[in-house]
Length: 585
Image (tube, rainbow, N blue to C red):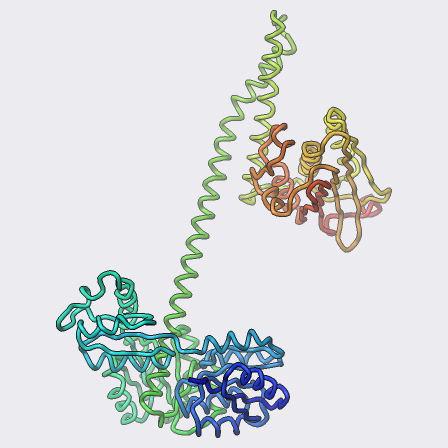
């Protein structure tokens, strides 16, 4: 069957071009150029989908959507816009629009949106209770499903063989055959879907009706109670507040005009005190402006008291669907929060464990290093065998390396816990850079590398922790030496400007890092695999520790690298920490 599309757009060229695209793909298209004209067409014919512009002359898209819903409870409408009207679009989506197309939109986006509007498939409801089947079928049909009802287990089995069945909803107690027997393999998936759906249907649906017209309120009870709703009634704001505390409804239906009060004012109070309560406004007078005002004050929907029961039921279905989505979202948020708390607790436990172990190891290590150093110095006489000197030197070097590693772990644990304390002073970064280069230069020369400095004459002073600043430089330089092959070049560059602050860069002509490994290089213990890394001792703490120390100063450490071409590590200290030499003096 050819789908019928109604296009409502005052831009005639745009409406015609969209219509031509859809006609070429087999759709039957009609066009209206105003909201009023669209409403007239919608009264006269049934359309599968309506494409509606938000900003229309006279009646706008949102007002037209209200009118459409008065005519039929669940029209399928896709909004179109070329303007920034987020508040209208959000209200249209909340009020049942399928989606939004932003002009100019691609043909593929249009067709994808229309595909979403197609019927969703076949559902077989197997239940010998005619009231239940009668109540659930319209709900499913309004949401795009085709529905077939079976009264016995045998009839359900026959219908379950139909091609294209999407879901089977079973009563556990069926005449002739039970629902459990029917849901055995190969149709077991249907029984699982039934259980989930029945669980949702079994939840009590509680509604508070606030209306000074007692006869009308009781007529709502007569309509809704057979469909499983629990109804509480209040005739004025005071009793409404009392009933909310007693009955704990999920939805409140408020008359716009109460005897001595405004339903819109009551709405504002209810949504303020019970933010999860879903409110629907009711009136005996068709008043679109009042509806929009109520929606802007927190109402979820708006219903005319003259609406047909099926329209009322459809509206309430939407309310409870929204409630279900809110609860799912809240549960997902709580699960994410719990996972975050657990991850942070595990991280704290790990950091505390590392810190404890590191402290416990330092004492015996200091003894090992101290005594081995004494033996190498032969303070109490010669060692005797020269071979022993080699062994002791290995003990001393290994102990020193392990102590350095433990100190790094302690510093990183403190940084992760935010417990690094800065001992700030105003220092000359030139002195620290030259000192770090003097310490690293012998190692660079042994690796056949050149090490240079490029420092401007007017370099500002820096307010920083002197030990940390030197440690940052040593870590970056050591990393450059480690990953630069023989006959390579390393350079330390410093620069400053008033906008950025002080920048220290360490550039090498080394092996570089692949783009996918950059994040790994900045993670604790995250070593990038290479033939050079296998030749050197290390744990991968140098860069992460340097980054943590720079961040502790309010700065940022970044990597600029290309595989096979080298790496530049840039540490930026904020301008607040850079002090002009004249000011420091």
